[in-house]
Image 1 (cartoon, one colour):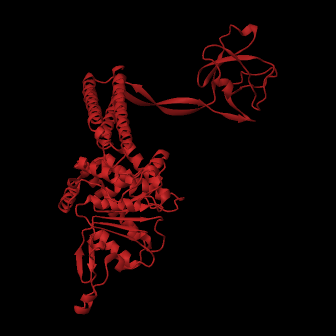
Image 2: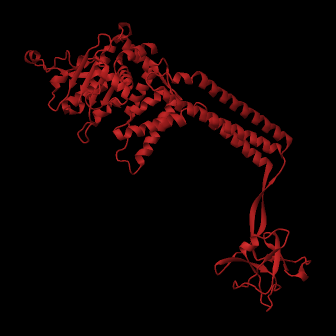
Image 3: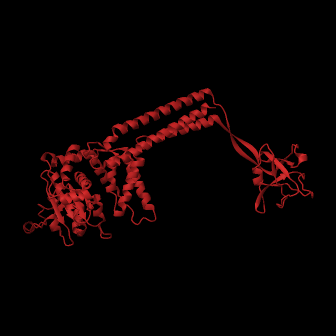
Length: 526
């Protein structure tokens, strides 16, 4: 299948430049049975791509029309059958060679369609049914390709029709100079694609494929990415500066998933993978300004959340947290202890501690000098004396006497006079006026050997399982990640974002393993 689709794409892209992605998306949308909208100025190959797509289907019919304000349903769905109207009084159209009999439809300047055409198109796109008079006719439509050089105008009732175009793509002029020069040098670019007859898709195949596509599964990783993107959209819409919110209906998400399933099927897979999810960026924007925003949403979701469910880190995290809690309970004991904290007293612009000296600290005039600056006290040594300045209760400095002190406890100070006669004096211990407080203090205890044995078993089990998971991720990277780069419809460079998530996941598991090893070292050291 994959090889066949690649051959078809190669033929469709012949003599086209910088149109590979839009050709791929148009083919994908058509095989999915959905519709695509191409936004771009005239002359960027929109109609050429549409005409080539019809060549993909064996004996496929196509219909194309350039809309204008005066277009009528007759020009799209066929003229009224006058003979039936006269003979049988039946209002029916002659639909042969018009939209109701076409496999591929291209409608240019789609937004110029009148209300009657719009209403019929909604039924055609949604149900693949055309109401011709009294009868409902199943139509062979596989893909409706629409185009315009503008987005639908606001307030003109075009929202429902706009919502039906699942893929939306901005088609621009050739940007690469070399490719542009080659384009100019190419003699002719045919509207038809030369596709080998055996590679063309038959009607029977197409309908058989639809059944197979419906059976494609959605991986947990893809579901997770979709939900992350939805969350990003909700957060974006909650911002006060959002001029126009991004709206994606539940019905639209269902259609988007069908496109992703088609991508998986055409890539010979039975499950949607992360690379398929990059296609979502082409399906959820409403304004040109939103294109870069939704691309970032999708890229970030794959990059940071892609494999978070496939490799369950939370299970190990919970086990490690439980182990740590058990270790703490068995090795640590909390006790309430009483302590004294010096009472801070503000005098003028400084903070002081008051010394409970019982009147012993006085200057030459027998005035009490029992205050020390908080900063001076905090700078004292624990065993060796240091010169200090004492103050009175007004914050006035003592100039007449010199003192030195040290502090071996947070609320105790040892003071002696600083002179030759007191140098050998051991000093006097004073308490600081303090507040009595209590606090919890953790003490360590040694657990029973049987408990340590159980911890060792738990550590061994966790580390082995983590190593096993890391090995599985490495194997996945080696064997399966390569297939991500071979997705037909997505640029292989984007696979690096999925790989980043795998590397990030490995780092997270390694980090958890280090936590376990650290816990073991801690209880072994007791």
